[in-house]
Length: 482
Image (cartoon, rainbow, N blue to C red):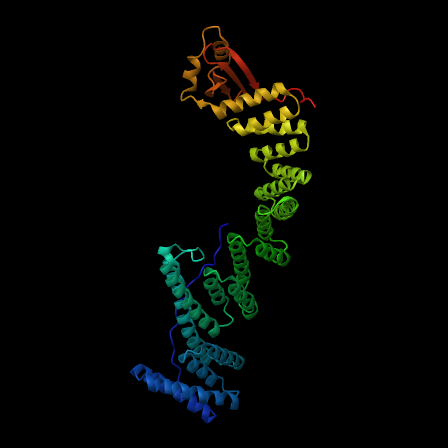
């Protein structure tokens, strides 16, 4: 099963806009703002210790400010700034958002722009670093969930470090902008690409609530489907069929109109059936047929689903159900020789020989170069005690199966048999054959000439040109004997 992955997208970094110092009513607010401004100046000068000291003081003062003067949203914006400088993304995101909400309520567009710009700067830095690390990891070891060879183990370990860095960066970005759907989606991407599907699923499910106000929130639902499909596929790849079946059953309940989930359930059951015996085996195949059948019902244009349903029912011994599914497939694709072949086999098992002959004869006419269809048709005639027609079809099968096709069919036919022989007369009446098979049976050398358009073949004694057998699949002739 091919795995679907989410596509990470980058974002341009916003420029940090340094805001002026506001006239705060509360001394803690004013002092905290001053500490932020002074700390940034120390940072520019390379005074790291002083810078960190100033920022910690800013956080202390502005936290008291937030308690004492709840109306000073500008100071809250500075608190978010200070937290961001100290890499405390969660508190920073909370302070920034409260400041933006408060200033929006006041209609102070200039100060809103300052806070938004500052938050965007820190968010973009973390976000873009996360996207870069995802790209690095994919470049190092693209198929991370694949078991590495001895030579690839170091590469996988290196890729894991990049993914972990991506997760840390994107988590910071998410904390700074918890309502941003794209950030949430790409954080889930990093988890999913590592095969950590449960964590990816949790991020996306929570994100649908967190980013409910974002116009892009709908994409989280799409991403969640992809993650779930990948998780289920990973369980199948690991041959954890019981877990895969349980998981797919949950998904079909959660997404009852999603054909892919029923298809996955069918695949898990089909694979598990092959590990069982007797009644348990048949029971799983029947359940697989039901799941595939539901998928086909939801997506009737995908005849492969109907094909799988019919095959599952056939293996389960549920022949009537199998017949119904094969006919549904053929309703979509009347000229599908494989479906005709399978339906013919099912009908023969049901002792419906007349119908089986009609169906298999159509398969032969559609694909006269397929020896298997001749063998099947011959076998059905034989079961129906129509030995003459059985011999006709099986002669063509043996020629194709045991013989070697002549490189130049026309030249080979012209060189066969003496004047007046069956071969010579047939060549004169029918023209050049489409294919000539040269083979032996019981020590006798034979040639079988196939005329596809005329739906006939002729088998001759290669030495004398005497006709041994004529085969005609242009019509079924009289009904097979019962």
